Image (cartoon, rainbow, N blue to C red; front, side):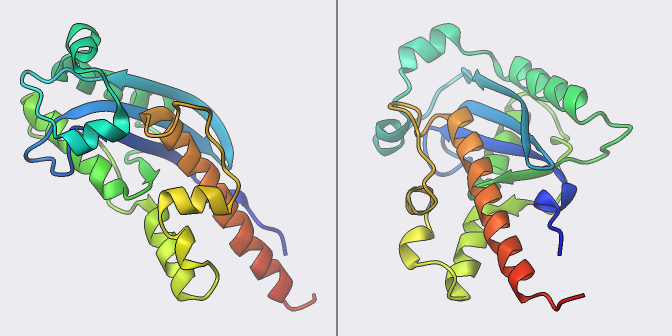
Length: 205
């Protein structure tokens, strides 16, 4: 039985660093974008956002370690951030081929909510052209644990990265682009695991 990596799907891997957990109350600080096309990593981008008023909580900042003074000086404004996101989508997911874009990530609903915040702050009534069905590694890990295929320790991102041997250089963890790419590596490992199981149980031709 042959196994088509990720079903031959082209994904946009998305990760954000934020000032807190609630997109209604806290700021979007950075966005990481990584193309994963049929299991091969392609183009990527990362940008930092300086909202008009930056709202953060200490716990979030202890993870992402973004210097807010630096962010205020060098981050792009919300209108420019939306334009940069849309330029990336237009280049790598042209609308004549991809009317909507499949987004992948870890708890990816969280990241999409913060992009929706970005659009609101930019005065946009529309949203990014993301498909409503998403590929969420957090849900996949939980399902595989329920199916007895993974230990409970591997159901969060840190545990899953450790379980599958996905490593980060010092300072890379909890940066938007590196986390997006790490999630892509995790999805490939999960697809390989499930694909191998399917191959092993397939009936001989």
